[in-house]
Length: 88
Length: 150
Image 1 (cartoon, each protein chain N blue to C red):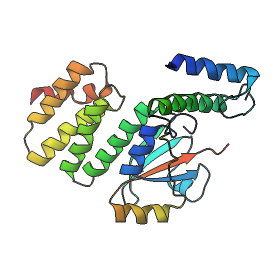
Image 2 (cartoon, rainbow over the protein chains, first blue to last red):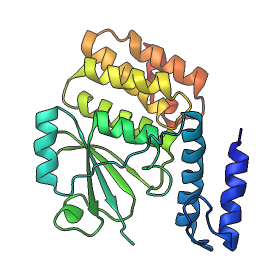
Image 3 (cartoon, helix red, strand yellow):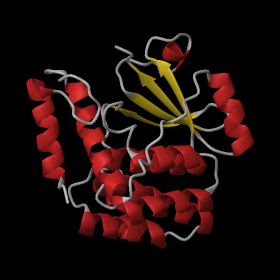
């Protein structure tokens, strides 16, 4: 069974320029965001192996207009998570 | 947040089940000015009428984001006088994330909610005693200090 340390070592290896065997992507160099995304993907891959090959992660379905979000909030009786982000 | 926290399975599940996620750029007007955004990530909990109840600025790991959102939900209920619902969110926070940075404020606020819903001051003193025992250096322990006399 591959440990978390093995996954991290594997992604560290990816970022030394060898690329990803899993995705076929080239190494991403010193980009921290891509490093951690690859590291997290590695965790997912390990988790999916434990779950019999099913990757559970899906994306959050973000609203982009506050009016639409508030309409949904009233209908579904839920609060709104408003995230101001820097798209870079 | 995009690289570590938002892709997390538990974060995705929590947000999908409990909140309406809304994402806008930090400079999107008029929202940025309306909410006085000066730094990102800025994560705000709004009630369905658009009123702000909780805000955090800066990165939060998955094990801190979920309790922070639970605290925001609890504050949203508290500030709209829905004390039982507030206590439910705070109990969940304290049960699932007792080590989080949001836990001391949740203990404080749960004590206040219990007092407001019963008019019995004993929960305020109990909150102080729990904070003193479990989070002695928290600012919320200092804020609860007067309740030791109840």
